[in-house]
Image 1: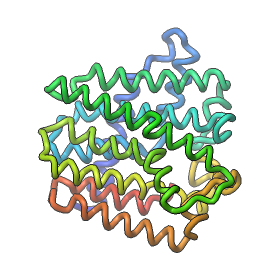
Image 2 (image 1 turned 45 degrees about the vertical axis):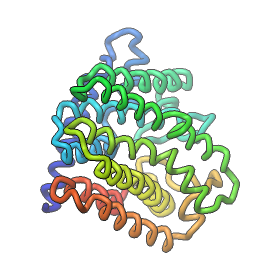
Image 3 (image 1 turned 180 degrees about the horizontal axis):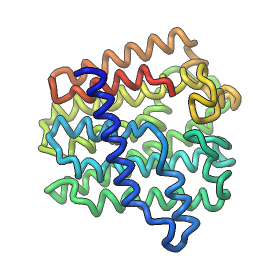
Image 4 (image 1 turned 180 degrees about the vertical axis):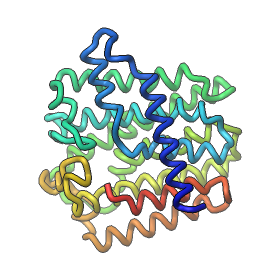
Length: 298
C-alpha cells in the first residue's frame, strides 16, 4: 500500500479516536467542572495516538468491527494519558511541557493533576467494561484483565517504579530491556492483543505471533524515543528534550551509543515485520506502523 493510503488511514483512526474520546470524557460543564476540564485538557488535542493505531491495525487481522475498536482504543489511550499526567508530576519526572503545551499540574495544580490521572484510569476500565467489545462475556472479562495487568505493577506502573529506581545507575542491556518491556512495552503489547480480540478468535499460534510483534514494537518504540530524546529539540518533540540525560537516567543511547541504538532499531523492525509476515495483507497496517515508529521525528 502506498504511503498516501497509510497516511490517510492513520489520520482517519486518529480522528475517530479523538471524536470517541470527546464523547466518552465528561463535558467540562458537568460538576466537578475543573476536574472534567482538566481531564479533557490531558486527553484531547494531541499525541500520535500510536496505541489506538495499533488497536485498529491488529483488529484488521481479526476482521473486527471499527466501533468495538474505537472503544478499546479509547480505553488504552485513557490509560496512556493518565500515565503521562502522573509521570510529569514533580514527584516523578517533574516536567513542564507535554504535547507542546504546559503539563496538567502546571496548567492547573498538582492536586488536580493527581485526580485527573486517577479519574482517567477509572474511566478507561469503565469504558472497556461497559462497551460490547466481544460477543463472549468471558473473553471481554479477559480483555479487562489484560488491560489491568498491562497497566499495573507487573506492567506500566512497575516499569515506572524500576525507572525511578535506576536514576544514576548503570544498567545492563538486559536490565534496561526488562524495564522498558514493562514501562512502555506492556501497554503497546496489550493494544495489539486487545485489538485482535475485538474480532474473530485467532488460533493460538496466530496470537503468539501477534504477541511477539507487540513485544518487539514496544521495545522499538522506546529505542527510537531514546534516540529522539538525544537528537531532537524541544519544539519538535513537544516535550522537554534531553530530559533523560539531564536526570542521569539510563537509556539505549547512553548504554549503546547512537549508532548501535539505530542498529538495534533496525533489527527490532525486521524482527517485528517477520513476526506478522504470515498474516499477509491483513497485517499491512501493522507492518506500516512498525515502519512509521522507526522513522517518526517526534
